[in-house]
Image (cartoon, rainbow, N blue to C red; front, side, top):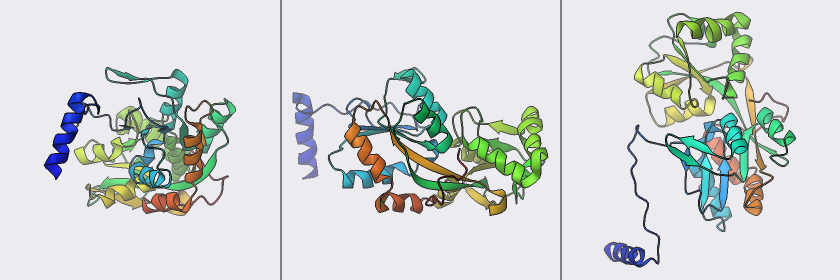
Length: 299
């Protein structure tokens, strides 16, 4: 039965009844585009999602399509909200020699960035759908004995740090540094150690943090709690050091339909879905929490 079906599909593709499958030239760790998913050419919904949700999206979109089977094809990106905003303004993104012109229907980000986009008239009224806190990633066994944010100021601890120019989480982390050790700790990590090369800034987003820890380029890195939980969940070799609530910060995430959306009905359906029990269940399963207040701290 399986062979017959494959043979039939091959015949249909040859006759033009079905499009041929895409040519796959992907080489892992060489030409991966890890934050671009799907076919933008025929998508019935395009979502630009904050990068820290990359591991949530497959389950979230599967749940959405079960609720909305009419939305058959979805293209989504999981880059930092600042990068996604720049892409919306320029109309294109370049990955190596590839240039894609993709316009989103839905934008997911923290409150500060969302407010900027709303004031510019780029998105409609947003809704809050999840919250997150910070944690510290270290290699399994914690060889540097990192127990707190204060330990990231030690000269012998190499810190993987999200780039403040592109990642909203950097502002949250610096706030946590100041809550933990005052301006002295923030200065030590973000100025002194940066100059000495023991604080490393990401080039894309904090997906790089576990990679650097595992390849020995860094010893520790502050990230969203959900990301640290995910690395433990997949047994990557990276584990989590928790940050006490008194030194931690909380970010709240919002979803909004893009005002110039090409698929306004699908966009609004997704925004409304993000607050349903089905969506909340997916987010909770990956370590996100329900927002306690829309006035919480935001990236």
